[in-house]
Structures are given as C-alpha cells and as structure tokens.
Image (tube, rainbow, N blue to C red):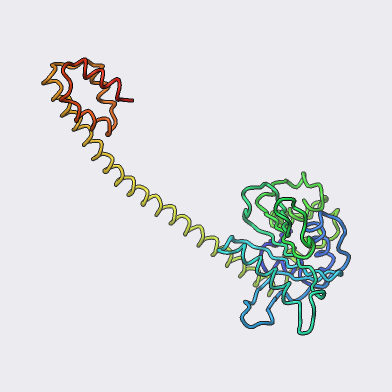
Length: 324
C-alpha cells in the first residue's frame, strides 16, 4: 500500500471534507479539540469557502469548515509554510466568521461559538514543547475566562510530535501520527486499526483507490509543494551566503579599523617609552609591562604627566596608582 499525505490540500479535503467522511471528521475533531472525549456527536460539513457578506472583506479559503450540532462553527486548516502574517490570518478568519453570522435584523443572541483548528507543519510557538495549544479570552492576572467557549484557537504543531508507531497510546497520538507520517506507512498498522475512523481515513488515503484524475490533481499539488520547498530552500541558502559575505566584508572593515587603531596606540606607546628612556635610562621590565597594559585614556593621561616625573620611581608610582 501507498498512502497520500494528508498535508496536501487535495488529500486533506478528500479525507476530512466529504459527506461520507463525517465520522472521520468527528473523531478527528474530538481528539484535537476535546482531548479525545466524545463531545461532538454530529456535524455538517460546509463549503470550505468563507466569503464575507461585505465587499471590503477579504475572501478566505479554508481546508474544511463544519458546523457542530450545538451550532459551533469549526474552521480547520492545514498549513505547510510559515508565511508572513500567518498568525494574523488565523485571528482574522476566526473573527470574520464570528461576525459574519449576523444577518439584517438579528441580535447578538444569534451569535454562535467559533473554533479555529490549525495544523502546522512547522513550529509556531518555540517557547513551549506542547504539541497542542489552545487559546481563548481570559483575564490577565487571575486568568478566569471571558466567554471561554465563544472564540477559541487550537494549534497542532506536527514537528513537536516525535512518538514512534509503537509508542502511540491515545487517539490523539494516533491522529497526529496519521497526519504526519501516513506516506511512510506500507500497511494499516494494528494499533491504528483500533480506531475505526482512522482505518477508514487510511483506506481513503490509499493511492490504489484514487481515480486517474485524482492522482493527477494530487501530483500537481505535490509538484507545487516541492517547487515551493525548493524555492524557500534556495532563498534560505542565498540568504545565508549573502549574510556570510556581508559578515566577512564587515569583519574585514572592522578588522582594518581595529588594526589601524591598535597600530596608532602601539605607536604612541613606543614614542612615550623612548621619551621615558631618554629621561631615566633603561626602564625596568615591570614599568614596561605596566605601560603596555595601559588603556587609551590612561595612555593620554601618562603623556600629559610625563614631564612631572623627577625619577623613575615617580613614574612607577604613577603607573601603579593610575593603571588597571
């Protein structure tokens, strides 16, 4: 068997977005949103396009959109790339869907909860190792909820999930493993068969069951993904190379500047040493070492005080009192 990757737009919709996949989507949402509890008993899968009623609002494309039996709307999106302003887009989709529920003459009591479930193929929250993160309105200090069930965002970060097939325990583990690793499977493993909806999802994901047109559509999407991955990889390499070149150039310039400054300071020390040797004769190694260790500011003060010294002992005392 060969299984298609649920990460592609075509595969995700085929597995989770058709009417015959309703039980699959219910099991998946219960696992991702409700920690495996059978909270959702029924739902309706809607057209994934989420266009606003107001012309100025942006049309937003979602992978799957469903309304639960309690009228909660769930927006499900599989995101491969961490594109610019992605986090803002998730919030925008959530709020737009919530606000667009009201038609002319309807009141706020007609608003129903909205949940945005986003699966990312990249790390979104590096500060935590949690695979699933849930966000809703709450008070800043005491953290009590403000309409906890009204607006909610749930994120599943696939790269943080590292369990192997034999380590899978909960239905949550098994669904995340399916999303992340389906193409690597050669058969439907026994521990995944334990969840009937997962077995059904893998059956749908079996390439042998796809039509010629479906395979062609899948192939085109996979090509786009590979092209995008290659473009991003190239851009990253070019960025790194450019950064190295700029770093080298800056390093050379800084090195030249530092070398010029160090040469100037060393030249001043040589001049002062010659002046002191003319006055006091051969200097001791201790005095020379103290002079060599002087900072720029200390060296300037020494050049001003040099004519105040009567003996080499005066010089030594000054160095011991005024140097670090």
